[in-house]
Image (tube, rainbow, N blue to C red):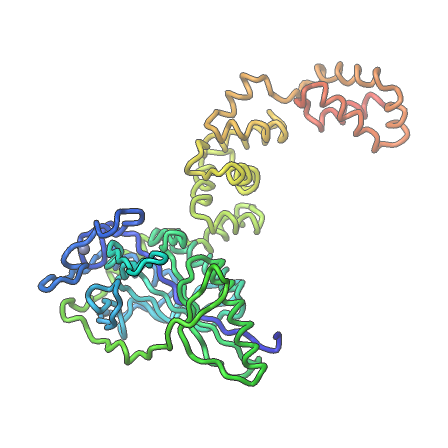
Length: 470
Ligand SMILES: [Zn+2]
């Protein structure tokens, strides 16, 4: 199959995190609410109702477009996209057509630019449910009219893994900007993929669209499946049909949803109920000033602080981790690499293993900073700090724990000296070995540390042993 090269483009829908829907005052966040409890004449499309534009949603869409380096027009407009769907009560969707909020942007991925063709604002549809074996379907219009940002990429992606990485990056950017939770599990980030295959260097092949991908894993699997399927067809000298496919999560395969509609089928026309939106320089200036630091910039800043590149990326692309890291740095002695290692390593490991997150745990930036400082200053060993970590994550103060449990590292040479003397006296055989072979000192070192309950500072013990052995 490897004689064919995949060509992949994505369409990503982000649910904008606003209080109200795109064109009415109903709450936008309805996940988990009883069906049809957040609707009004506007989002139900009742005759005589008039939409008004949600300024906050528009701001967020614009901020996202700007962050992606899109060019933003001075005037944008909403269009009606006409189609009949049981979960679209107006029989049209308010979307944007030839005047989207942003065009010609990009996202950097692995050192190269993946083109973003356009970003536009639109309203979400409701949800249809098809109860198993029931002779009816159910419609929930809570989501109808919720604000969405649709982002369409150029066909610049080449592998399923790359597509997944790209989505990770979109999610990180959206969260860093606060424009969307971008949580696929709650339907806050939904991706459709366009995929074709071709012989390298040949013109683009016929693409198919795969819809209903509700996780990044499904995106990757659906792409892998389609690439194999299309490569087989082309290898047998067949031709791929331009269809819209669905993804069968249970069967891990694509299926035909419908033959592809052309743009003409949607009969786009400007929505006569909504005025065009003028975007002036002052508006853009204000948005630029309000734009928080983006993940790429964060990563570079962390590397500049001395954090290892892989740890820097891990922290920068996780909004929760990076915010915690920044707050910890503010209160710590300043060893960014040490704080990053603890946060990205032991802390994350413990939280994951125990089904916790930084938000649900009782760990505070101050406590993490104190724990790291205690190790850095040599008050406790790294080993003791790891033992304290579960209690610190549980809300305990590291300094109080060290005091109450008497865990200060023994750094007093005279106190340690007598322990070393005792251990040397008890282990004449090890002493002889150590005299013959410097590597054998480790056995003695271990015994001294053990008899201090792990509190002796290893470097000091080693020094003392070497001294006493002459
Ligand atoms: Zn409404």
